Image 1 (cartoon, rainbow, N blue to C red):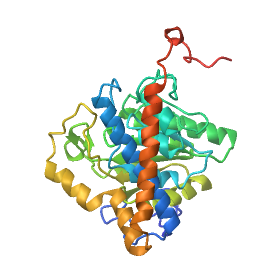
Image 2: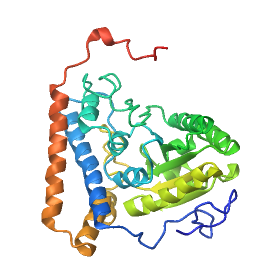
Image 3: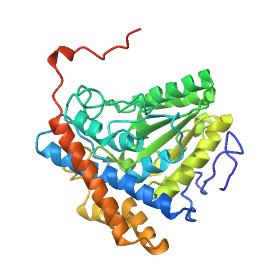
Image 4: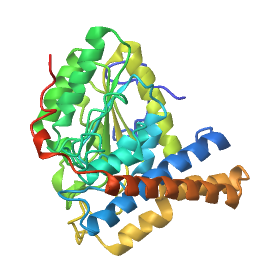
Length: 350
C-alpha cells in the first residue's frame, strides 16, 4: 500500500491532494470471494436490522430517539475488518450497526431498543446507551461529541497498560465542530496515544449540511494544527474503508500516535425517526442509492468478478432475514425490567 510523508511521520498513510486533504484511493483493493461474501452478509444484516428497528419504532415498540445507520454500513464493516478483538470501539448515538459489527447479538441489541430486560443494558439504556465489555464496545453516547474524549481516554489506558491495543473513536461531521474534540486531539497528539479517529461524514449534522456549518469542509484536515495526519476515504466502498483502516492501524500500532480517517458516506433516512429530512431532495437520496449503495456495489462485484450465483446471495438474504426476525421476536418476548432495578448497574461495585 502507498505511503507518504506527513507533518508527523514519513510513515503516515498517504493521500494528499493539491489542496492538502487526503483523497480516496482510485485503484480497487485486492479481495476474494470469501471476503466479499462476508462483507455482503455483515452489511446486509445491519441494513435489515435497521429496517426492522424503524418498523418497530413505527409500531410503538421502541421509545425515545432512534437513529438509523442505513446507507453507512460499509464504514463500520470495513473498519472492523482491520481490528483485533482486543481493540476498543466507541461511537455516538447512531450506534446499532457498530454493535452488530463488533459481534454483539442482534437479539440483545433489539431487546435493548425495546427497553426489555434481555437487552445489553438490561433495558435501561435504550438505543443510545448500550455497551458490551465482552466485545470491547463502549457505547453508544447521546451527547454530541462526548465520546471523543472518552475514546481518547481508552487509548491512554491501553498505552499505560502496554497492551498493544488501540481505540477506534467514531464521530460525525456535526461532532467535528465540538470544542472537546480538539482538546482530545491535543492530548492524543501530545502523548502519541493509539487512537484512530473516524469521522463518519454523512453530509448532514441533523438538518444542516457540512457546507453551511463548517468553514473547513475537508474534515480530514481538522487535526493538522496538532500534527495529526488525516485522510479522506470513500465510505460507501467497504474495500476502500478496509484498506485505509489497515494502513491506519499499522501507523498507530507502530507508536506514531493518532490519525484521522474521514469517511465520506451518506445516510438514507432522516437524522432520527422523527426527522422528515425535508432539507434535501428525494432525487439526491435516490441518486446516492443508485450510484453509491455499499451493499449493491459488493453484490455487483460478486456477480461480475467472482461468479457468485444469485442462489448464493439469496441464501444469505434468507439467513439474515431469519436472524432479524428472531431478534424482533426475542425482544418482544423478553420481559420489561423490574422496577426494583431502577437504581442498579449505576456504579461498578468495588
